[in-house]
Length: 165
Image (cartoon, rainbow, N blue to C red; front, side, top):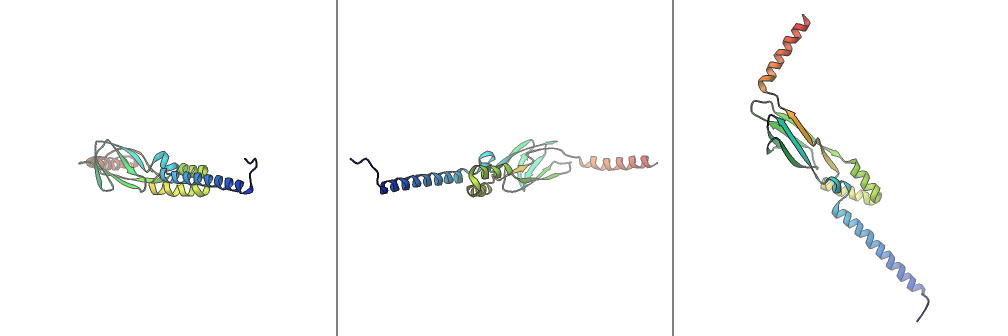
């Protein structure tokens, strides 16, 4: 039995340790690529949007009919969306639901994984929609009656005439 280590024994040991470290790092990178970065893990690739209106109205988003308000819909964070609320006898209400950058996700990716791996995680978040969120996520509106709008214009004109006199 020998009580000493040769140079080749130490070299094999160091190579084995380097290989284990390399495999561990590659495993970490692969798992982050599969599970995504901070944005994907914390708010995913979609946002729940709560929509209410008075009176109840028909909801369509990006040309697709979703039903009547009140309604909660799950929309992809990858793009902005066009919301239209309409009801017979009322003026249609139109708005854009914007895609906003999640700075917390970007900072988290870089801070936790470093600039190189963090950059890769940002790309994963971008491809899954986790790099963005939608705003606003709560929409509550009151539709205006078509006849009421005409009457309001007349009343404003009458009031303006009395103020001038």
